[in-house]
Length: 608
Image 1 (tube, helix red, strand yellow):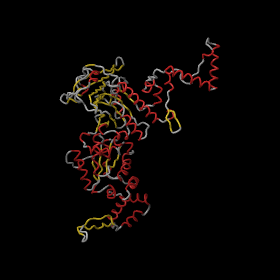
Image 2: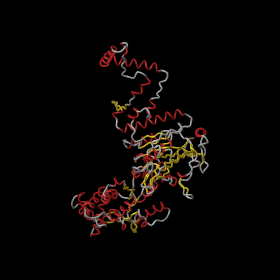
Image 3: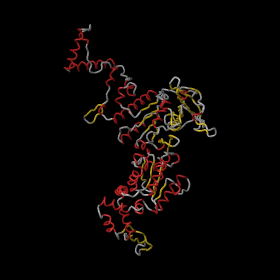
Image 4: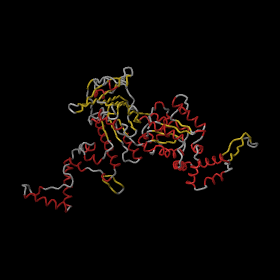
């Protein structure tokens, strides 16, 4: 049996006015820049790390809203080997925590409810930090009495620092070269505790012989030694007192010349010559070794490290990021990881992801409620969403649609409308690959509280499918016209047909001329005239096989409407190339972007 930091509440720290986060054995924090991921990790460090890095800038200020007290509550629970909560701590943890710290929750489970309070004393110009064991773990808001959790009774002041629960914070600026130089780094602490056993005297004799041989073999070192012997003219020292040691003399100093080399086929390169990706990765792996040593030394005793890692993906290519995430997962204890990497986020389990986002009420937390999803639904989300569209974890708004043309055209229209690229505004345009695939995408972004929109084709079967998706989400029938984040193309059109019917025929011709040359469109329509566009089943039965007879549907491109049909067929035959070209042709013309797209963007602007 072990323990787990299950819930963290923070009030008044940096940009975190009031937030509660439930944690897993491994928790991955996603979200935009400046949404509180690092602040959350720093708050954990204050509560559990035993070191204070407080300044006046750490107190929450927003306009006239100023909070002069930082409150951090942490709930530790007892868990079994599968990290499922148990009702009591095992004997080792009970002995360590003592009955003065152990409380029970509303379900009669044993917990450790810790509160850290930090205030600023203006008289002494110092910060004061106190820790308490709460009398109970209350709901985040007592609606009856309108009391927030951080306004409840503190309980009894009590320390909470145990070597058995070490907290490790690894920031994004890690570098193993700096770790080698600093004695207090995890690598430095390991090197300073190297034990050579009982053979120290014999090893030092071998080092002495190595130094003597190096000096004897080097004319340069020998001349330096001879020159230094002249010191005896001014000092009362014997002539043979000078000793040069190219290598360390004492075994205890051996680590001071410590260096790391990575071999590349026949060549060996010192770590100084490697890029920051290798150096950052190596720093994390030495921490892994350090924690493993502590874990081995703890043996059967209570031991549970807590590791906070900031941006493990720094300087690493995608496959290396995935590999490093796996290696971090292998470290004993609990891990909380902040990331901007879609590859790290995609490597995590759905229930491990916590998305921090800003709203009118401040910074909040979103999560995917996997308890409401069937196993097949979870597999579909992983397969169709997380593994292929990891960028959505870091979006301010997402527009979903079905086809390829939209995926190419919408970002171009967005840049025209907003005056900035979609990337600059953190808007993602994501094709779901068919009208039946909206549900898993929306479930993910709804759980993470990322604003979403649908631009749907107008065909009857598509609209019916979208309504079914919304009914599943809302638990009730939905009138699409009343949904301000769902937009359906007019007159039963798909996106290509909508551009034709919306009056962009000239721009479409221009796009074809750019793609295929002058007269291509007219010639293609002429050559396809009268050809089969498919077959339909008739009511007529074949005398021989007694099956329904099929007949060809012949293309009819006569007249204005026929020409439009011909243009449409040419557009749909080459969607992947056509989308960006026709969008650019519309932008370069005097016409505005399609009205429904403009209305969509007006709604997107409201949530940005």
